[in-house]
Length: 138
Ligand code: DAT
Ligand code: MG
Picture 1: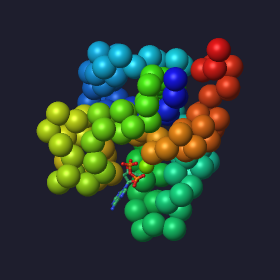
Picture 2: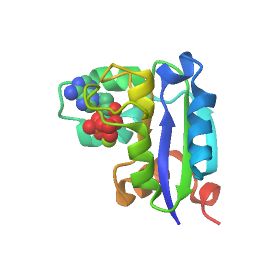
Picture 3: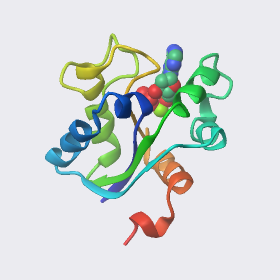
């Protein structure tokens, strides 16, 4: 079983999409192992997206991620990292498939509703930033 980090971002919370996003994950057969709704510090937003620190969009991304509450989840299942990424859809709005979460509900490259870890290694380091290990490991 694999675990991945999922964030329901501030735009999705504002648009009342929390239920629909969680429903899709559970309907697919994935398990929510830990979950909390939090308004995060600038420091946590910067650490979560540290890989993008040199990109021009980084300041906008950090201010978006601190603009309102986020629902953070540890989600597990077979190949959870890959499955969740496919369910979320591509980062580029012109590439996100109809049927994916972004492909159904977003056309903005920043306000794109959901985060999912891009590898098991990123999942491990992101989960460690957001949760205690005892929250999501048996
Ligand atoms: P993803 O969220 O699909 O893993 P990413 O890791 O490349 O995408 O980028 C992280 C976030 O940064 C992304 O969800 C939205 C923002 N972002 C990425 N590329 C961007 C761009 N070209 N312009 C503005 N924001 C961007
Ligand atoms: Mg990413």
